Image 1 (cartoon, chains in turn red, orange):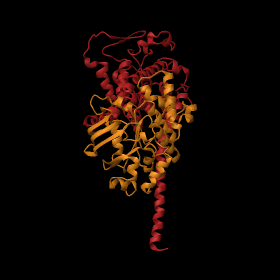
Image 2: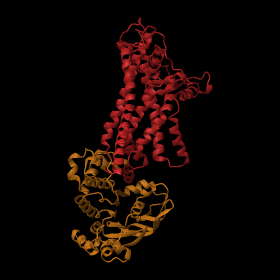
Image 3: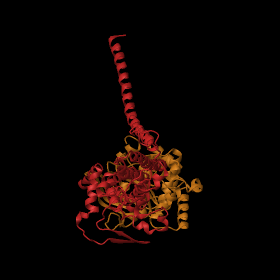
Image 4: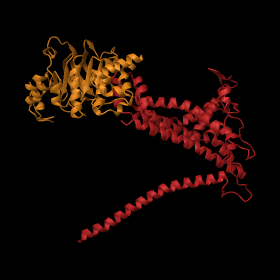
Length: 346
Length: 281
């Protein structure tokens, strides 16, 4: 073999080596993340179920904290009696109300930006700022919510509550909103609005132009085209983005602490005592928006900051409940994307 | 591009035609003008795409628009139902008349215009809905809700577009499951359901196999009994087979317009002859 051939062979060997090393580095990066999460989860599981606690001192009693009590009991100063039912219902109503405010606003804004607005400096400015807003730390939204919703710039003193009539009675809204579910949901709505807008814009953009043209060419108005064709076709994408945004909101603590959500309460939203109250006493529902609340992450935070090791283990159990809820929401998002995405194979 | 001499084109064309009655040919006194443009100029931003197009298209006839890619024939087609309005930065001067109405007048409702001037696109674009919902969409957006009425319209339109027998048992299955040719006929049925006066077709068969293409051509031939059809095509045999008159576009100008037979057999312009004999384009 001549000189050039030998050199080529030598280089080839090195090239293969580099190639293999790169693959190994990528594999390590993947496994690093997975392993850390797996370790965390396993540690949490052991702590919550009392199998093993590496941080526990010798006199700590190891026991299973993942019990039905956790889901049905209220907060208590006795760890064995304590539960997170108020947090579960608080998180539930917070998500319902956040969705109620943020979905119409977010989808509406996305429809305007994608379907109606013309490309000019103003819309470019809006687009850029929506992307920037998505990166603003949540505590900033908390401060905003405190000023705008909870205190309303301290403009109103002794202002009578506003009544909004609905079918079964009046929803009484205090002015300013104070530390209520209404304030919490509006604050979180603002926080996730950019995420919903961006996800919806992408979903709308993925609908082929030919569908819009077909609809317009048949004599449909712009609104009919959007409502009957574009929105249904982009719904899986919009829903996926919305659910992912809501699962970010359900884990938020900081903005809720700032607006003054309570971390210790023995009342469910609307003073509901049993789930059946929502059916048998529907007027309970009317007081939900104006009631104080706590949420799961706040309860976890509350337990986690207590000195007793039992509360630490209880917090682990609560984290598992929160993670399960998150997993269900993300699973729903994946399901929607796959199930409805398949039918729309353009 | 097919290099057949023009004579052969016309021979095959006349053989395939089921023998149109003489009175149906354009230019004969019985046929009134359906669409007329006068000195039509069209601009995409600073670029002019159409230069002073003046043309008279007879009702209940098939007019083919031919020419090399980028010659403005599709742009011209889309000025007739104002689909160009959707594109930002376009501008138009001159007039387009549909019967006696100038369709670019400010008081003209473009939604109403597009109901009258239907359009079939190059790539079949059924909605991701059932076959029934696809066809019923046009009538529904105008506010027809009566189920019997809708069923009647759907059946009539599907029969008119010669696809009824293939889909009558699966009206409630997805239109996306149909073959390409069936989808295109479904799109024609969807257009017919709005009861248009004019049907614009933008290379309706360019993406289809020969069998589906000939079915679409038969359909076009049948539909011209009732509708005015303007069709853009890259396929000159197709133009010769289906159309009564042909317009040749080149670089945004209308070079020649006349009876298809005359235009293919003895073109007046050198450029037309060069194009139809396949010397360029």
